[in-house]
Image: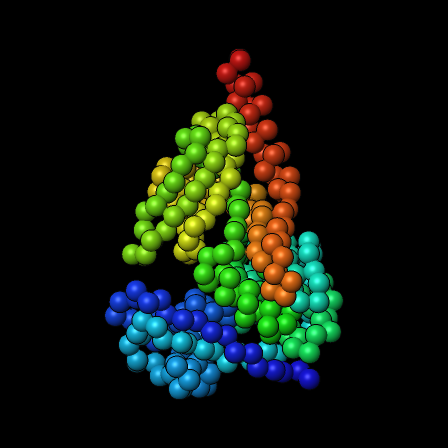
Length: 301
């Protein structure tokens, strides 16, 4: 069997009141349908349903709609070989460590999902998916933990947890400057509420930025580029950020200093509270230590 179908579901929030057409609204609501172009193609193939009926491009989205995507899973002809580490796995799900530089899913070969068959064991459950599916996304440049479903039931239950905010995610970032010891950023993003909590862990001197700080971050909402936008707007851009940092802070060849380090959820079958943590990449310690040494040497001379 090289192809199967899984139905993914999204419910439009009860307080939704924007004037948005279906083809625009669905972009980014499902992993694998990240652009309006991909949504339009799915609509043309009659893969998107609204309250059980085939969806059309021009319909105006209404609060409470149940939108479903009949996603076709096709086994790749070859597995993408990537340095994906498995931190937790059973017959129902897994938590893996995505390296920076690859997307989670999409219509390309170099994706996390195309690498999963090479690193995960095949589920023996009756509703095992043809291919393991990521339950949420990380930006291409962001490394860190991603929850993966291996069965259709697990995908549904984990997606519901993700949608209702019961999955806890912790990030670490190295940012320019020295923020307060702890704080909250709550500036809206794209007109939607966005809340980011952070705690300052350590500050280093730097000849590049004056100072740089390691921060621990918890998201209460999940807007696109939320961490990167909030810290940049507050004057503490994430180092290595190509989109939201001044050009002098790109730090070429070192990548983005943002890492999804911890994730906690209820196991979809056992219901046991499960937390998975990863140690930070060495660059989060080595780079600021070198900067601190250079900073001190300069000011001592």
